[in-house]
Each structure stands twice: as structure tokens, then as C-alpha cells.
Length: 251
Length: 326
Image 1 (cartoon, helix red, strand yellow):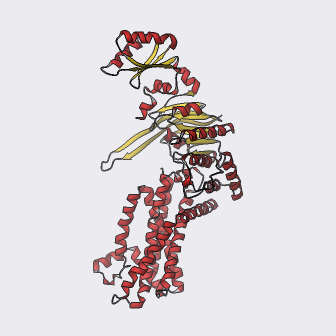
Image 2 (cartoon, helix red, strand yellow; image 1 turned 45 degrees about the horizontal axis):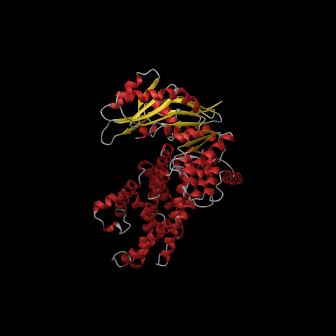
Image 3 (tube, chains in turn green, blue; image 1 turned 90 degrees about the vertical axis):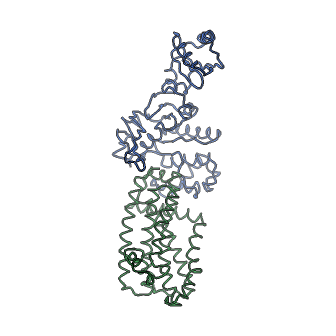
């Protein structure tokens, strides 16, 4: 166990260093949510029924969840590169804990995600975004769960597909319908019944409802428990999968 | 002592053809029996796809054998892979260093992953950078390294924990001649310091320059094994290479004619001509020339030499290494 913690720290530190040396990724990652904030959110303000000035308190929580999802779903590209350049093979010959290889990289991804979300929240404050304090702390917890789940999924896909193009198609295949059916761009109150039925089984929709409830400070909202539970299960499943995959990875 | 011993090691890959249900199996390694002795440079020579890398990857704990047994560094490969990992270093074909880190950072991380403390890792890194002459460029990002510099770093990465046995998979593929010679020198230095080295290569000159003992592997089996001298001597005699006009079965005719001569021990078609193994090359050569001339088979070129590794390869596999690669 101490070996796992020690190795995770080492892999984490090296991964952070690597990421910071490729600042293009960091900058693009930060730009995207801010573009939504600047170029999309103002449209919502004038849509009747979305609460005028309150629009940001509805939109930003959704945007945070989407950021958590999207930025983590593409981390697998880095792993494919590592498989190809023999980095993973080299690590597998050392006595390093296999679990630590994944944990270290996922920890880096979650850290990057939290930095992104913090930049987003702070920028949103200038647009009248007023979150509940306890709520936002809990929301960070939820985003960490989502980050771990999605990064693990991405690494699992990377180990299975081993091809950048296949991974990109796969990620897009998941994200677009999930995004449209989650009610993040427009609340699903406008949606026809069949879309709402699908949203009822979309864990992301619960996460977004939970996020909105947390920001509004209504911590008793049932969607919060469902959102946490759904992503706790997904995190467990995906993390187990990716750990098994990396044990068998050959490339 | 033997640092590696294998018994009937095999590896079969199964690949499912898309759409069709039937699984295709490829026997990459078909029962390899071999030993590597403590302190030697042992080479695996063979064309691409012969099973060299697959065998090495099994012995380095990267692939699980389909059947068979092996001990590596005194530990059972299948039962104690983690003990094996402590005793071995492995440098794969593509190296596997992080290109966004510096050489020093890569070595530090590798040393820490082998359990060294931060202070020990720093000391070992500095030491390695000096002995392998990485000091002048080791603090730059790896992505700026030349091919030869990168390969020396790879070698250092495999050495951080001072393993008793170092695996090098095609270490000089793609390197310029100067870097190759430099790397060979480093490998010899390691051997002098007591490390056993197991190298795969498809270069004859590399095997000739570096290896104490050699196994030739083809189609997943070891066809012959021994010291360089014993392999060459086992062919017995000298090698005469004849270039012939290869139309209308002339080669086949010449081959039959030559094999009927008492001094010819072997005659094989090779590279647009015939490769002969003869006893007493100096006296045999004029007879060979007279014989073919009398049969009106024009000879374009002729050369004679002591057997080379290529002749050893040809003798045991029926083709030259170059033909095997095609």
C-alpha cells in the first residue's frame, strides 16, 4: 500500500511537469469554458423564462459539469502516445505498482480539471454568478468524481482502441448526445416528453441538476444524492476496468 | 552459472479476424531451449518476425508464455515475475523515455520507481550521466536529443538499479554508424563491469562485433547456437560465392554439377548465384572455374572467404539474412 502511494506521487509529479511543459493544452483547456461564458451565456439572458440576471446561476453549474466531462474524456490521447513511444512498456518492466501508473495520471487530470473549473467560477463572478458556499465545496467533490470516472473511461478506451482517431470518434459519439440530452445548453423543461424520458436515465442530467441545486444552496434536493451515487458507481466501474487493462497492456 | 535457462518456451498469438468467427493463431515462438551464462554478451540473430523480440519480451516479464518454463536471474519467470524484475533491466526497441522531461528527470524518476530514495537517485543519476557521457546534454528535454543521444539515455535508464542482466532489443536500429560504434563500446564496458547482456539484432556486423555467444533464430525456433568461432568452424571449409546468369535453370544445373564433386560440401542458391562450401578453397577454386567453364555456364563474379555469419545463417536456414528479411 505504501508502495502504491509512493509510486502514485512520483507518477503524478512527473505527469504535472509534462503537462505544464505543453502549455498549449493548458491554455486551450482554459479558453473553452471562458468562450462558453462570453459567447453563449449572454444569449440565455434574453430567453424568456430563464430568469434574466439569474441565467448564470443556472448556466454556470451546467458548464462546470460539462467541463469536467469533456476535459477528462480526451486525456486518453496522452496514453496512446505513451503506449506508442514505449513509455508504458518501460514502466511495466520496473517494479512500479500498476495501479499507481493510472492513479498518478488520473490525479494529474483531476488537478488540471479543478484549476480549469476555478478559473471558470472566478470569471463567472464578474457576471453575477453567486453560488452557495457549502454548495460549491460539495460541487467540487462531485466534479472530482466525474473527473476520475471520465479520465478512467478515456484511459480504458485508449488501452482498448490504441488509436487516436478511433478514440476521438468514440469520445464524440458519447459526448454530443449526452450533452444535448443533459439540459445544459437549455433546461429540459422545454423538451418533448421522449427527451425527458431519456434524460431520466442519463447520469449526466442528474449531475447537472445536482450542480444547479448545490449552487442554489438547496442541499436537500434528491438529485444531489442520485448524482453523487451515479458517478460513484461509474467511477468504481471505470477505475477497475482501466486498472485491469493496464495490467494486460502490451505495446 | 546460467543467468537464463529456458525449457520449451512457446508463445502463440491469437488474432480474431474481423467479421469472421474463426480465430487465427500465429506461433511466434515454438519451443525455445537456451541458456545465457553469467557475464557474457549473448546475441539473438534473426530476421524480423523470427521471434527474437517475442522471446526477449517473455523473459523480461512483458509477455506471458503460452507454455514452457524459464528461470531468469535465479528466479522462476512465471512464479516470481516481480523478483525477476528486480534483477533485470530492459531497453525496448522504442526506448520509452518521456520526451517532455529532461534526460536527468527521466533518470531520476526511473531510479525512484526502482525504490531508491531521492538522495540515492540523485547520486546514481549523476554517476550514470558521467559514465555514459550524457552530462553535456542530459539537462535538455529529451525531444531535442539526437538518435544516438537518446539511445545512450535509454541504456542509462535500463541501468539505474544496477541489474545483473540487461536486455537490449535491437539497440542500434536506425542509428548512424558513429553512434552504433559508440553504443557498442558502452555495451562492452558494461560487460567488463560484470553485467550480462542479452541483445537481439538483425545486423550481422553487430552480432560479429559484440557477441560472445550467439543463437540464430528463424521461424520461432533456434536453429543453431554457440560461440562465433564455433559456429563459423562448424560449417567446415571455405565459402566460394559465384555470380551466375540466372536464366533457364542454369543455376539449378550448376548446383547439381557442383554437388557431384567430392570437394564440395554444400551448394546453395543465393543472391543470383551459388554459395559453395568447399574443403581447401585455394585448390578447389580453379577446379570449380574449369568445371563451369567446360559446361558453358558463364561466371560473372567470383569471391572466396572464410565463412561469415551470413554463411552460418545460410547454412542453417537455406537463405541469406537479407533474403529472409524480404
